[in-house]
Amino acid sequence: MGWRWHLPGVEKKRHESETLDGWEEGMKKNILCIGAGYVGGPTMAVIADRCPEYRVQVADINEARIRAWQSGEPPIYEPGLKEVLARSLNRNLFFTTNADQAIEEADIIFVSVNTPTKTFGEGAGLAADLQHWERTARQIKARARSPKIVVEKSTVPVRTAEAMDYILNAGGGVHFEVLSNPEFLAEGTAIRDLMEPDRVLIGGRDTAEGKAAVQSLVEVYAHWVPRERILTMDVWSSELSKLASNAFLAQRISSINALSGLCEITGADVRDVATAVGMDRRIGPHFLNAGVGFGGSCFQKDLLNLVYLCEGHGLHNEAEYWRQVVRMNEHQRHRFVRGMLAHMFNTVVGKRIAIFGFAFKANTGDTRESPTIHICRQLVEERAQVVVHDPQALDNARSDLSDLGDAVIFEPDPYRAAEGAHAIALLTAWNLYAQLDYRRIYERMIQPACLFDGRNQLDAEALFRIGFNVYAIGRTPRTH
Ligand code: UDX
Ligand code: ADP
Image (cartoon, rainbow, N blue to C red; front, side, top):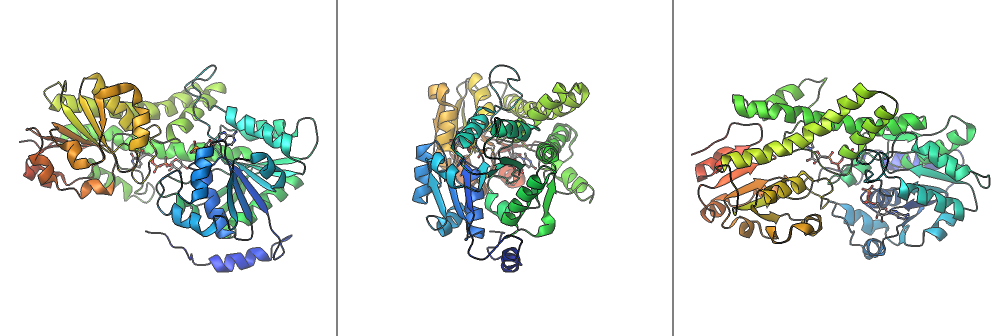
């Protein structure tokens, strides 16, 4: 693992934070997070680990999830999480379904409930569905007996904090200070991202109460994050920065994917192009891997949010600009399936196709917006027999494709998945797939055996020598 527990300067930071204004040794803070999902769970586990003098509670309405957290076996797969959890669980980290009581006790309340794209009514398919957010705000308002800092942790559209402020402080009573503190963790590397963040962003109002609340949250992160990496700004800028960061990252992926088709036709290698482009210091090497497109709960949702915001403000060209990043992403996975068809004599009817990887990326069991979902559905529409393998995401895959019946088989053994198959499509870059015995796999497949590498993860030349026809994204096909 690349990250370290004992980060340089952590001990020093902790000492420094003990001398901050208003901070006295032994004094405790009560932190609550509502929502124990991919963001809330790992974030609170790290805060509890790094701030042993704080009492951290995490509440969720989903009892099964809470029971799993309480048992020390997190309900989500995330490398390193179990170990961090074990250090604080039932010491200063507690999980509960009783949010009401936890609200009364808390000084700082993070809200980390799900905010999927709306599927109904105004803004359907574009805007964020804020029903869970609003319900949570109303619950906080109903239960709080003393002033609270409420921290927006879910990805929400710009100006949500303003709406929260309005709901929470309507009709007087105790005062709530709303902060924006967007999460930048990526799944699969969540613990490292939380332990060593590029930056922590805190948005608050430019008033005495706002500044004090911001300072209070800065103190939490300063336990382990160097001060120069903690940025404070106004709430709207903070909210927009989160959407903008994800939009920029997604745009890079769509840009390299937009070049991959041209590489395949002209004989260029998209990996070489990405390396050359990325070595320009102004561009940088990250997020330039061509593939079957981005998935996950954030990129598409945030882009669509941005589109909706731009449109709402009459900025139609800007909306169109960002919408194109999503369109390119959809196009890439269609193009991948069209390529599979073309290379398999324009029909996959009755052909067994092994899908290697269902999670939206490696090292997570999360399948939200995974490109594999769309690719499997398209293959089933073409009447293929699809066999899905994934080391962590088979349960989610079963539920994502539950309506497809016998057309999809879920297979926990990659060798068995490929047995009798006409083709393998590698769609998630799990390390495991690079380590399989492809000679053994090849010998048990129908010939000609095709391998479609949707993540450029395998050694195409070696596979070709074994006998496969190899089609990798953004590279010239190698066929016999
Ligand atoms: C993303 C952001 O990185 C994170 O900062 C934010 O808080 C949440 O959204 P996440 O969705 O967990 O994180 O994963 P990320 O590593 O960003 O990958 C997103 C998708 O892009 C995956 O499907 C991945 O396979 C794809 N991707 C990524 C590429 O296709 N090519 C790349 O070069 C990088
Ligand atoms: P994210 O990736 O943003 O963390 P998840 O869907 O993984 O999203 O987690 C969100 C969590 O919020 C879920 O476990 C869900 O049960 C929880 N949740 C939603 N609404 C409420 C609510 N009103 N009170 C408590 N928890 C909630």
